[in-house]
Length: 384
Image (cartoon, helix red, strand yellow):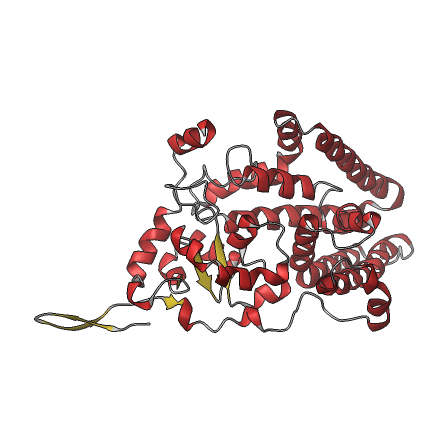
């Protein structure tokens, strides 16, 4: 990490260097999967023939885990408010809080990434089963029915973090909390106005109908549950997860696209980065390979680490960023707390060892990639 550099006439000095990919033993290639909490043997063996690809069995295991947690959990939250009027308000809120914390800790990250990859590649032979994640599971995680695929697969991937992408990070100073607050407002609140507007501008009218029907279904579910079942239970089961989900996803997308090369913002190798050799990849379907995902969004999640190595030269040519032993949220926290020097220590050089940059050079590069993309770049992309 810190080889001595000989300078004529000067005593040897130690110049901090970064990780080199050739020296990295990447656990993503061999570590066991951790996307689900536990297996349900009989149900897995019974239901797995319904999968298009047996490599997606972790998704099936996770889906069963979620049902096994959410169904009794929701019953307890609503039941404590409906059939136990003697339970103090404090305890009913603590029950709701415990349910939400369990959902967040055990399943939020896992579910969102399952929803993500299953939206790009349907996993069941039956289309009604494929719709379950977006239309039935999603509301219990605070995600409006049927909206995720439009927001992510259609808008985000087609517009690719550029002008018409409502989740684009390009125009922001991406180490500023004030900028993130503005970003969160668009991502979490104004989405209900801006996403249908996007459908109209891009003439995706069938997706507009899907969006409106999904939001109407979701809103009706919340109103009916609050009015005719119990408002406090609905707060904990649906509304608080909604605020939580939109905030987590906003910060997640912000972190994934926090570094953008202002010289080539339209390049898939320069509008995001990869996170390799981290345990988080084992519970998020290799989500850390985000450049790979933007280059080939239909690639199966299990193939991403190999694809990364097979296309290493294209990453080098595109000046791509890669970090080791750290994941997107960690990167975002280090950036937002102005700790670029600490982040540079996780940087991985993809080329030969002799060309590896110093930590100073990496820190300078990272800082330059946090700047808003100039309007001239946006205009050039639009003209192209």
